[in-house]
Image (cartoon, rainbow, N blue to C red):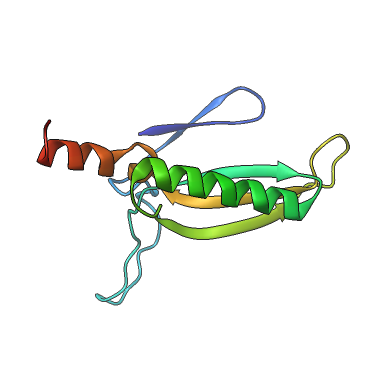
Length: 115
């Protein structure tokens, strides 16, 4: 069971399976098809200037890969815009593996080679 916060500051109970999707979600009928339970987390870069948002996302990726010691697993890049007043227009999201963001590869290397 999970809770989703709504805009009215109320919680809505969700009945989720181990992959984090609704237990009532229709499953693909063919045995070779599936709904994956891959943990990815969006990292967001917002700006009124798209090249600036993309440059900041690239700079963050470079710093994060240096910290991680390997390429960050990015499954998708999502571009959206927000045309509401007083809001950055462009919204660039990198969908990154949450284990990478948690530093799991660093911890695994440290466990293999304690110094």
